[in-house]
Length: 177
Image (tube, rainbow, N blue to C red):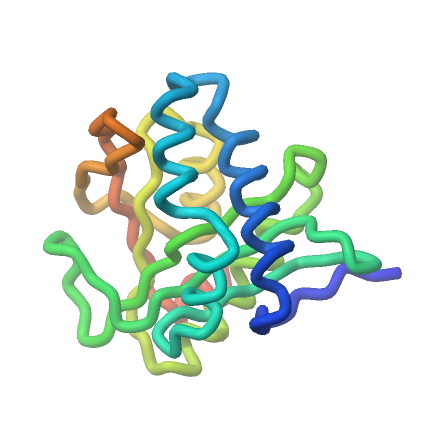
């Protein structure tokens, strides 16, 4: 059976919340204090939080699954911006995660294409994201997808203020990248 990428619905909130927290911990636990990971997860993941995100018309949540098993997800925040972005109607790639087993499989690229199509359909001209400066794998991936660094901001991981690079891409250009 093929992998499908679809928009999340309210009934997905519980499994999405569990998966989102799992992939976040999988990605960052080795390089950060457990206390900071726990604080961040408590503040950002959970059934009610993900249910609110799914029901928020300014956020589109995409789930990638195979035979009802979540393999990855992404979230697009429509008309979201930061100071270093110059755009008529920017949107933010708020989150994009795939399980470790999916790294290198091409799944993240498929998910980002769905996000870019959605951004294009909302008439967004630029899409931006924040990526931890100590995540070279993600930075390289986003560069291959047409994103470039335009600034930085602070990402608060629990009690730890970390430096995120702000990357941006032209939506239409990235769609063909």
